[in-house]
Image 1 (cartoon, rainbow, N blue to C red):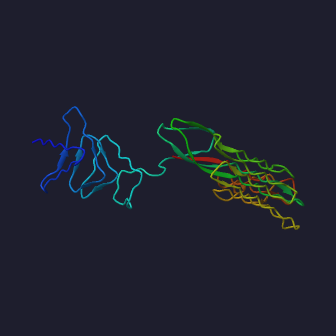
Image 2: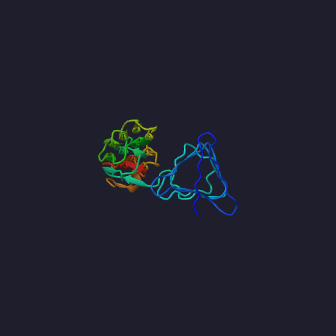
Image 3: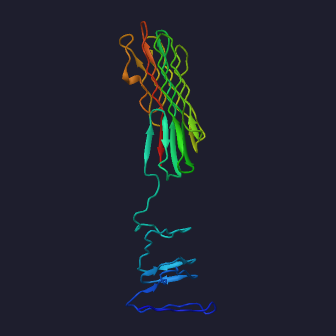
Amino acid sequence: MAVNINADTTTGLELTSDTSGNINIQNNGTTKVAVTAPGVAVTGALSATGDITTPGVTIGAANISTPGGTVTASSFSGDGSSLTGIAGGFSNLQAFTSPGTWTNPGNITKVKVTITGGGGGGGSSNSPGTSHGGGAGGTAIEVIPFPSATNVAVTVGTGGARGNSVGAAGSTGGTSSFGAYCSATGGVGGQANLNAGGAGGSGSGGDINVTGGIGLSGTNPGPISTAGHGGASYWGGGGSGRMATSPNTPSTTTTGLAYGSGGGGGFFPISPDYQAGPGAPGVVIVEY
């Protein structure tokens, strides 16, 4: 049974049903019906083939179904504990450990990037010199909104080379970047025969910019000389400073341990030298 109800613009329209059924506002098959009201209170099911526009809609124990449609609201009240099928936050992560391009799947409008530069290599020395750890790469963290279908070039800084001869300083780590949005420089290489560990790199352009840890200085008080540890990055500690038990014997413990951490210094008490540890490469992590 179809019911047609008309009302003028003065008195408005009131529809009332008993508890046994629903109110269905339908069109005639050719024209959509729009319902506009300052407030709609529904305790049953609300079904409309057109639009419902209202500053406030109150739904009792009923459901709102929009097959193929969209519900748009400027605010939401409640804890959302019963909501299902709602996508929130970032749900994907891509880590770059070498240069490349981040490709937007086509529907992403915001990303969070965490960028760390390469760690500096450790310095190498023998008695009576000292050797020091390399500094860690800096880190930049940024949430970036940009249009969909955007591809961004990614650069990942390499770890600095270790000092591999007597008195050789480590090399500085490379810079990492996410397009022109933000970047992070590498840590400075550890020195040899100088009282200085490598300085940490720095982040720039991020919402948060972190300076990498400084490489530790070695000591040389005679027969108990030590080598300095590498600086810690945002991701963790650097390589251990190590005194060699035999010449020219690299150790995996002196290599930077985490993304962008500094290499440990190397020390051999007699001759000819001890090879220090290289810095760890940086990383670019994209969450979307």
